[in-house]
Length: 327
Image (tube, rainbow, N blue to C red; front, side, top):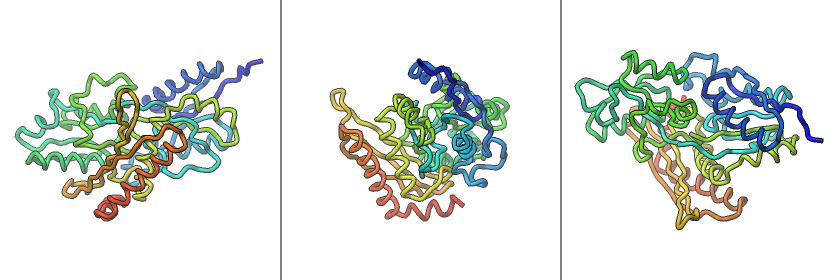
């Protein structure tokens, strides 16, 4: 007889988190033929109004969900993968990393401007972002164009951030494209930022589905949601972050691209950047490696690329740059 007990899916309360979790819930209903109910949980990052760099960043949107898992209040939890600390608790399993959404950052600017046009006018463009990573690369981009911008620290949900532009308080804001797509606000994007100019956060655009390690049956069911190539890419990015000993609020960007040859994935390119928040100094490097066919070897190769690139970046002075800005 099939189990008709509802699976309890823990999620943050925000509109974006609920939309992301509902995507996973619907897939899980089809796989398990069981009802799935969303359980809303408030995290420290949701109630604190301080900037993420002030409250530590790492784990502030995750800990309450993980606590609910270990207490048995929910059966699984869905996170934005970029919010996860790089160390995985032994009692929890990262059971699935579903196929990734667009990892790029997006500009939403007044008058439909792109970055070059926004920064070419009279005065200094004021761009809102709570991310040191974004601020660093935006300043560096402006410098490369011979221009100066002002980055303004902001927090809040998507509506709040876009509202700063609509009200004229800011000239633009930068948000994750994936989030805008998931809540149906992609039509407001005025420019998709090329990773050659602004690398996203490690894991950006990907989701993480966790359950307790002891529930092997559920972990097996959740694994059907897993996309091996997405997991490989984010493993490389998060290994880089871990080897740099940086948290999710540090000014670190990373993106792993899977390159294809006649329909088959043959190579992975990993790009990374660390910089001062004023964009004056950046360490930006990349590395490539073959993509093995087997899952275990693919995971090892992803980890290997992340470690190799981190070693190169540290040799170029990346640690000093993070130390200045990640306090």
